[in-house]
Image (cartoon, rainbow, N blue to C red; front, side, top):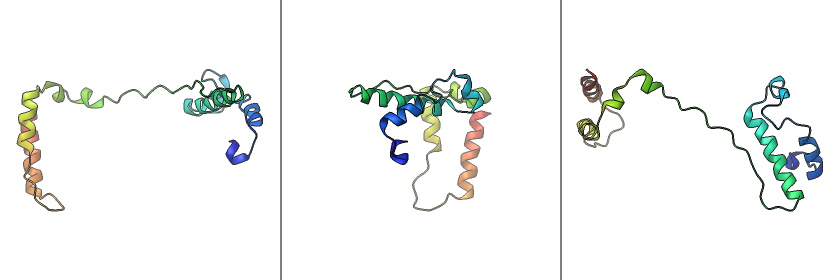
Length: 121
């Protein structure tokens, strides 16, 4: 904010003290702010306070990582059934000899898909 608006650090801090800086603040839902937006304001305020106190570091909050998307394991359990040796053999069967070409021929694709389907059946 300071760089774009040319506010002094004190002015910016005064503005940030009026902003939503807590995810539990009821104004967050009303203003439709994401947790990331709230934490950006909170972290900027923390930095400005630390600089004003003459500190070289400040605490910051990081949003929780998103939950892993595990749709494949719920959709098809095949990946969990491979042991290392079986997986190595499977990958060796799928290897193709390198040829300098920009595309894969249809018969190569049909062969690969056939090998994959044979393993699933």
